[in-house]
Length: 177
Image (cartoon, rainbow, N blue to C red; front, side, top):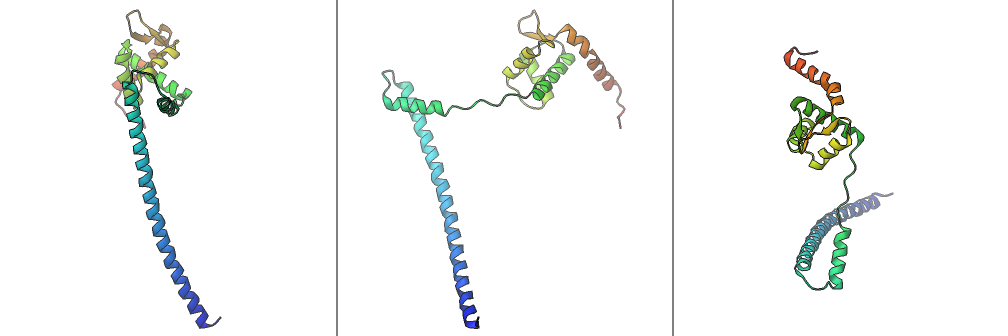
């Protein structure tokens, strides 16, 4: 290949690289424009849904077909259920509830919840606490007083050692290495 051919090829290569950069920049701009457009579409659809909800709730007469279509769309977009709690997590929650009862005695679910949340390290829905109390009926029992829960007699005996260990750890400040 002669010098003339290689220099012209080099020139053509530089032109194409320049074209590539321009096209890449245009693609980037178009992608950003597309994202903005999609965001606007979502916002407008949400506004339409909200206005459809308002108009359908204010209507006292019959429902026409367009409103039925909108209501069926809303039903389709219903949130899915969260995944079930694992056995390991339920066991962990049970242990924290036991610890709360050992430390504080019988409690209402309302008083128990913040204690258990502190021990778990995250917020828990009230129905999740009730699920733990009901699932582990061998450990927890609803007392005669309305809404008061506590440990069963069998569990009190089983977890008495836990309470003794915790009190001995509080009395003995020596670090374990």
